[in-house]
Structures are given as C-alpha cells and as structure tokens.
Length: 304
Length: 303
Image (cartoon, rainbow over all chains, first blue to last red; front, side, top):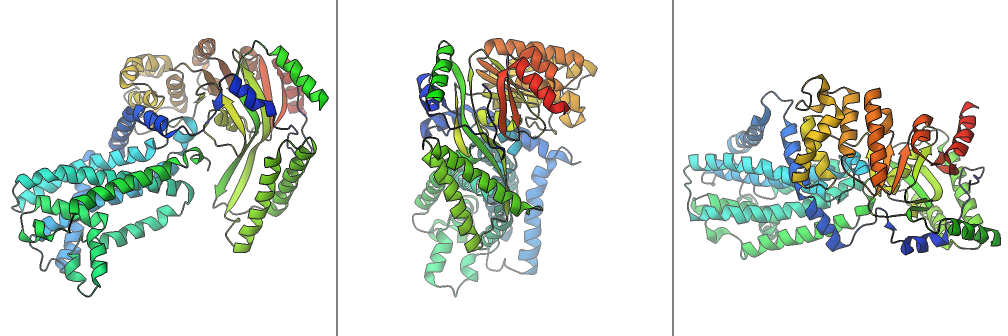
C-alpha cells in the first residue's frame, strides 16, 4: 500500500476516522499527551533519584575545569559579600545606623542570592537541556527541580560560611537559631515555584534570560539587602513602605536576620505583623501558581 | 469512497489477529525557529507552502468533509498571520520548518520497521514524535505504552566520568538507584570502553567519539522496551561492537513489541527489518515489504 505524493510535497491522504477507534479498541494512548495531575506527580516522585543524582553530578561538574575546584562553592559567596561590603559599606556608607553591618549585609546577600540564582537557573533549565528533552521521556518539571536542588546544595555551603561570619561577629547561637530551618524551608518552596514559572517563561520567550536579571536587580535594591530600606526611603508614602516590607524577599531576609542576629534592631518588634503567615502564604502561592503554569505547557517543551 | 472502505475492510481482515502498537494518523510536525532572520526567497516559499496547505485542506473537505478542523486551522493560520502583520508583531522573528507533512501508518506487534530516506527527510523527527518527544502540529500518534527512543546523541555530560553517566542515564530511564548500580558493570563491559585501559573513571570529554557513542548505546539498550526505536545506532563503533550491538538489538526485538530502525545502511535494514517506510521531505513515499521499497529507493537514489 504505497501512498501518492502531490506536486507540492504534501501526502494526499485523509486522516483516518478509524484511527481513533482502532486506538481505543486496543487500548493505545496518545503519545506524549500530558498525564493527569495525580499521574504527573507520581511520575515526578519516581524521578526523585534522578533529580538528586543529576543535581549532584551537575554541581560536581561545575568547577571541574577550575584549578581551585570545589573551593569556589565557598569562595563565590564570600567574594560577593566582600564586593558589596567595599562598595556599599565603605564607599557609599550605607552602613550608617546599622549595628553589625557585616552580619546584616552577608545574611541579606546570601539569602537573596539563593532566590536570585534559583530564578536565573530556572530560566535556562528547559532551553538549556533541549538535547535531553528530545532524547528522553520524563516529566519536564524534573529540570527546574534539578536546578533548585543544585542551588540548595550551594546554599547549604553558603549557610556554613554565613554562620562562621555571624559567630565571628559576636552573634552566638541561641534558641532563635532553630528558626533557620523553617525560614529556609519556606524560602525553598517559594523559590521552587518561581523557578518553574521562570522555566516556562524561558522555554518560549527567549528574551527572558536578558530582562530577568534587571528585574532581579531592582528586586534586590528594594529588599533591604544592602541597607535598611526604612532608613533610606523616609519620604516614600506609607503604602509603598508596607509593600517593600511585606514582599517575599524582604520577609525571608528579615526572618533570617531575626533568627541569626542578636543586635537590637532585629528584634521581634521590627518584623512586620503576621510575618510567619506571610512567609507561608508567599511560599504556597508561588509553588501552586508556578507549578500549574509550568504543567499546563508540558507537551510544548522541546518544540523549539 | 466505496473503494476506500473496501480497502480498509480488506486490510482490517488481514490484520484481524495483529495487534497495533503504534498508529500514526495524519501527523504534521513543525519546528519553530525564533530569531532566525528570513532567508532569501522566504516570501515566495512561504506563499507556496500556504497555497499547498490550502489546497490540501480544500481537497480534504471535498473528499467527504471529514476534516473540518484541518481546514479551519489553515484559515485560522492565515488570519493570525494577517493579524500579526497588522499589529507589527514579528512574524518575521521566526521561521517554520514543516518537517513532517501528513504521514499515516499503523505498526503491529512483532514487526521490525526500517525507516529510510535521504538526509533531512524527517526520519529522526518522526521517531521523536512517536516517542512523544516532539509535539504534533496536527494529527495524532497513538502508542501502546511508552515508546523509547534509542538515539546515539542522547545527551550525556562530558565533564562527568563514564561510570557516573551510566548511573545518570539509568535513573533518567526510570530505574531505581539499586537497579542502576546493579547494571553499571554490565553496561560498561558491553560498551567495551575499558578494553583500552580504565576509561570508565575518566570524564567523557577524554573519550573518542566512537567510545562515547558506544557508551551511549550501551546505556540506552540496558532496558527492555515495548516499542523501541533505534536511530542510526548501528552505524557507530567498530565492526566488533557492531556485531555485538546487532545481537543486542535482536534480543531487544524479541522482547519488545515493535522495533523501528532508522539507518542509512540498506544492509542493516535488510538484515533486521521486514517492513520499510520511505520518507522524502516529510512525506511518506512508500510503505511496504523491505525488498520492494528498498529496490525503489535504490533506484531513486542512483538517479
């Protein structure tokens, strides 16, 4: 049964109305169709080992060509903090009015970097793994989740560096340090949702990798990473200050400073009202919205 | 109409006992490339393609009006293109490659099907579509279970050791860590990369291209599959490895329901397949018994 080809190169055969019936009769399913939500989550769970191993492999491959190797995991965040300290703390003098500016700065930089790096990596997680997508079948959410896992590994190292610095500055461990775990967990959930959102964004609109860094930078300046936003923005209307105070990055950074630092301007009375509810709400909102947004385009990844 | 239905009835009787594993129904695949500026003569080509699409849709409607949706989408496409031109949102920013243009066939359990055609005829694309890795523009692919594509260019990480790549590949195929670690030594042995020294602990960027291809094949073939598609895998490696991999493919075929094989080597198609699909620029030229199709193909190629 050979087929005729038209002069324009289009095969002249009509879609077979029986194909669907035949497929149904023998229990065939549409190839590459997006599975239901429950099934999708089950498959994602099945791939948890792959996510872990992939992240570990990628992390260890990251600096294999650098002479200092894995030492860069520690060096990168340290150098970041040092640069910000010189520019903002010494040259621009944003340290005025902030007690223990070094702990303040390093905590802010490291916590914000966790979110920023996760988003930046998420943008490229689909577009950068096109080969893998075209070769193997797995729930695509594996890719942004791998990036999140990689950044989590980096964060654990950063946190150790952070703790050393903070203790060296005289903030000794107390009961409040136990809060580090829930704060990081909530931030992780928040970042995961953001990474999935960014992954779909980066898979289609290829400009996202270009404009997103600017958005992230603005976000950083509005999050009180390098200075106390409240001191610098006296003349802002109240509603703007409230927004700056309650946006997710500021919430997670403030909570971490509250947990780690003993200086009096990071006592509980300076945290915004309902801060833990806010932290939880941002995390869940981000995760659900990001996941749904990503999942809805599942079939489309890998087309271009 | 009556002729068609008689034909399908006959075909249905013939295939009564045979169980379909893959049904490809009027499949179209379009690659969209963004940020590629229009090449020379793009307007002309675009128009020609448009005309062809419209003609095809028209004919489909005339032939019994079965596919109103197809015609509708062609019209919708023209409307949206006009809209894009009006709003100035660049249709110019992207180009399309219509890689598969309406291919239909049914594959049955126990068949080994060769896919042939000149370079760029859409062989690899159609395998990807069957595997569910390329979304269809129009039409459908129905499959029994999850087909697996055994490509030689499955992405592996060059900075990692061969051993690590083996584990990673196995996990990606859905194995548990335990299974992956159990199979690791067998896979490395099969690939033969350790024949010239302890290469499995070196990063893959130290491998020769043949070694890397062999390792990839060894990893991908470590699992049994319902519908298995092999893309040019037999072309890799030296003669010794080729023999070993052909034996492995026969094993896989005995376990798998249906095997597809893309190859430029007519010999390996003859050796392994009983049915051949011939694709040429995205259309199915011929579909039939191996000898018949290969003869026509060889004649076409030597012209």
